[in-house]
Image 1: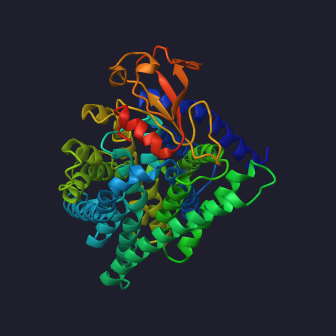
Image 2 (image 1 turned 90 degrees about the vertical axis):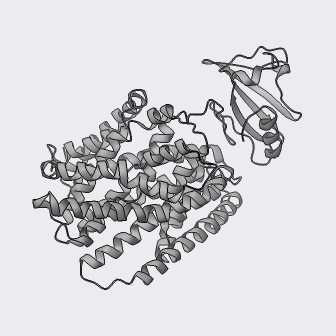
Image 3 (image 1 turned 180 degrees about the horizontal axis):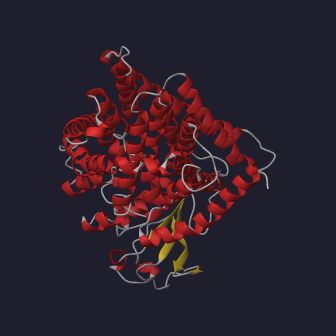
Length: 497
């Protein structure tokens, strides 16, 4: 059998079984992405397999494109009304927070390598370079774990975490480039680095917003011969937003996230099917990205850096990230102390540090391979310690929502409102507070122009009447004549919207 065919068969079989592992991982708190990493290490020629892959440039390109898809999909799933209240703390965490995390961690790395790890000595600038690579949280990992666990967090924590992790790569990238130039004994101006940071941030934000608006107009005006082509059209648009912004030296990561956010909060043709497509495609991109980096790893090289990597990983989890978070957002009174603790804990390191590490690996500096292996070990540490405890810590801190799962554009059974209508649909999970006036539908505080069109109880659906008895845990599928009425409906029912 030809080698290329064998490779495709192995990939197909792994993808097939990973779909079942995804269900298993939800139940047992084992991140499915951990499986992809291990499988990549096993099937690669660096491990026990036959697939030869040792190209940092290709891995970097695959990681960048995969992350663009994940960011775009995450932006489409987010809502402006959820993101707006957390913009300021998110920006602080993604800028000052990353800078402080890199500084604290860099000083720690320099201290332990000069005092304890004789075989892993790093210069001051090399220590800061390594710290910059691991300073940002990873959107792919945050998105995958929060969504797969189905966590509904209080205090707008999920949009805060996703917006921070979707925008903090700009600062981490600029810090990495600056310290890499210093390590290579090239000139690097602090003023130039600061100017480039703001330039990339502003250009990325403008490109994301305006190209997203343009994309909505194109989708709604272009008449495709086949409805199945609309998701493909939007996929092409997402790559255009990312790559065009990168060409003008803006932040492609920020642009593609804001582009997805702009498009996802607009009305466009075939919205439900398109979002479903990107949800699945983002999952596949995560699989490909982690699998690729797994193949790039040489397992035998991990053991010598285990102590070093574990020490840095534990430091950034317990001290580096928490100190940076508590420095950035101590004065936000709307964010309680336990929520700040949770934000400190969900500082997941994943594919983005590995993408940056492949950039260093391709630069061929003296300790490039050492840094890559340490980054990989730190990512594994974060995945196994933080990734497996995201929902557990949320329960300990009592940050889980008892409330409601709502969607503007689709319901669990796939209903979608026509694009031409000015209506809105949502799903409400009934809690005891909703039944305080009685357990029949007519006694619930539902305002005018809002209709409960279907009820889900267990695995069964039925159309309700006014005297239908509603139980705690039922899912009500509600429709209103506009989004404003839906917000009024939520407030009258005691739901924070």
